[in-house]
Amino acid sequence: MNKFYASTGVSRAVLIALYIFFFFSELSLAATVQANFEVNYKSGLFTKKPNKKTRDKVLPMAREALWKSFKAKQETATLRALEANKEKINEKLSELISNIEFVDERVLKDEKILRYVVRGVVNENQLNVFLVDSKSGGNIGVVALILPRAVASEKAFDQTIKKDVSAVRESKSKSIDASSVEESDTSIVEKNLESSKEKASAGLESSGSQINRSNERIWKLADSAQTVDSEIQRYFTEANFQVVNYSDVAAECGSKPMEEVQAVFISSPTGQPSSAIFKEIKSASKKCRKVVAEEMDLRYLAIGTMDVDSVIRDENSGGYRANVLVNIKVYDVSKILASTVASVGNQMNYGVDSTEKSAVDRALGRSADEAIRLIISQLQQK
Image 1 (cartoon, rainbow, N blue to C red):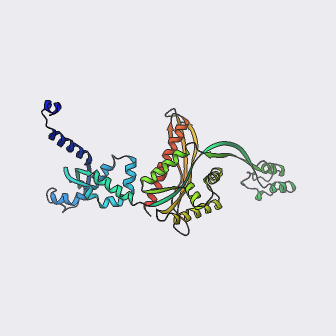
Image 2: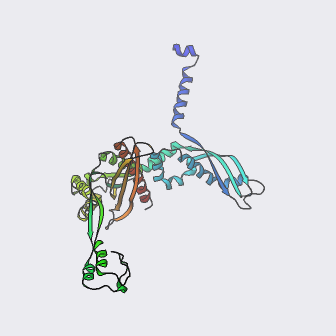
Image 3: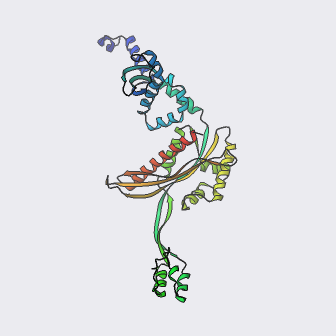
């Protein structure tokens, strides 16, 4: 016998049994959760105090409360997967949550409320298997063309807007009738019979132009474009969508190359492509839909920009605050007329960090997270 087993007095069989026990205990993942919930009751639900029949009636509510408590402890990626399969999970909730016990039960007679504290077990193994099975069946594809832009240069200029001064010239040639002298959008002229035509014309002449201050921005592709693209793909994938880069669509299905399309997006003041470019992108997506029909249902085309609108000093942290403006539209290219099925418009997100670059990266990451989450939520309702 091995010296270790002899010195400890533990047989080899016992140690093997313990190893097997702990090994399979790790595999059998289950989370015990506790939750509180309240139920408004009416007369007749119970006689003197709640009983087993009462608890049976509120059992579905107890299960929902435990599920909410479980979700509150999950990471963002897990929550996205759960949200993407919400309806299917709700159908299986009675199988996922078991061993429900009522820890505390109180009757608030004045408010006619039953207050419960419940405890239950969530079978995480079964939940993970269910999510894997759901993901394996997900074959809806999305062509993603979402570009992060940053300001390359900005020029401020004054724009002079001239107004019609024909009334001024007319006032110099004839006298002004008191009844015709009123307030206007160009000047205010007194109602005075003694007013001279020179005074009236001077007032009109002084308001013959208006100065507007404007900014002209030249955009570039943001430095963290690849990171943002990876994040967008990850969020879609976690929600059971298959992501196809536009560069692959252009190469396989005949469209303008990615570099050319990027240049159009970046040079556009609004971040929107011309109608001709947009038509070509849609046509290529529709063509690729047929090419990859056996692999996936290439149904959606997501187009948009995430613009780093400004980077300023953050007074609270002493670092920098970056603001990002998001505009994205999703089209259903499975239709003859590709209609808009989801969108995020003029949504402003921000990120704060110690340096300008890290603040921008944080803001873009947050923008991708929020925007894709909203888009997925809209798509899941279709």
